[in-house]
Image 1: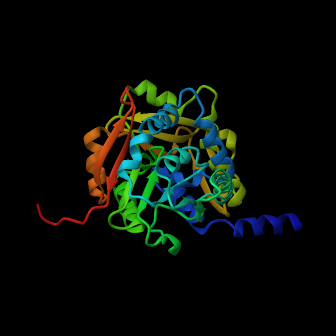
Image 2: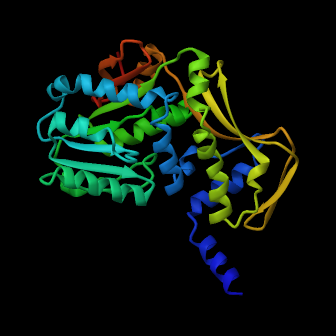
Image 3: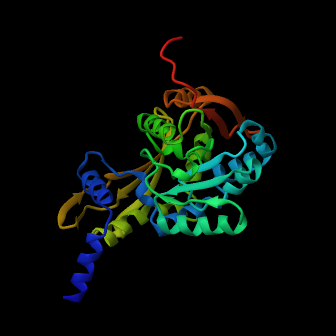
Length: 325
C-alpha cells in the first residue's frame, strides 16, 4: 500500500504539460513528442556528455567561434546590457559572452531547475560582482523578465543551434516571443547550424559510444518514472535520419518488436518498425537563417562563421516593425 501511495504521489507531481504532451503524442499518427522533455536532470547530464563527443561538432565549433569574435563583440553591444540566456543549460559558453560585454546582470532561463540552480551558482562564484537572476521557465513562451533589469539594454543569448529543434513555424513563434520578452532595441546573439554532408550530420546524432541513443531513450525512462509508465525500454532503439527535403536531422525511437504498455493507466500499442518522433535539428543556409530571423522580428546585423562553414553565429536587433517598404 505504501509503495502504491508513493508512486501515485510521484505521478501527481508530474508537470501537467509533460503529461498532456506525452499522452497526446502517443495518440498521434505518426507519434511524436516535443524535444524539450528530454531535459530532466539525467537528460541534461547526457546532453552535456554529447557536447564533448568527437562526432558532435556543433559545440566545439561554436565555442571556438565565440572565442574568436569575443574581442569585437563588445563593440556591437550597448554598455551596461543585461545578458538573458534562453535555455542556459550548464552555461558553459556563457563566460565567453560575459567576459566580452561586461554586463550589468545575467538572467539564465531554463526548464531544468536543478541544472539552472547549479550553473547559476557557478557563474556567481566566477563573477562575484555580477547580478545573477536565474529564472526557471519554458523559454519557448513569452517570459516576464525581472523588474530589476527593466531599464537596462538587453542582449539575448541563444547558442547551440537550439533554434533548429523547432519546425520553422514554431521557430518564428519563439523568435517573436524572445522579441516580446526582450523588447524593441534588444540584440540577439544566436547560433545556427549549417547544412553539410549527410554522413557528418548523421554521425553527430548517432555516435559510436551510444550516448545520443541513451539521451533519446531516457525520455521513455522519464515517462515510466514520472507518469507511471510501463514502457519496456529494451523494445525501442534510437534512430537518426537525415531528411533532405526538410533540411533536418530527425531522431526517432523505433519499436523493435510489437509492444503494449500503459501510461497513467491509458493503454497503447506500437507495432514493430513504427517510431516515436522525438527531435528535429534543422540546418540553415545563410539566406535561410536571415529569412527566419526577419520573420521572427529580428534584423540581422552581423554574421560570423568558422573557416569550414560548419556553423554560424548571428547578431540581430529588434528594430521597429515595418509595415511598408
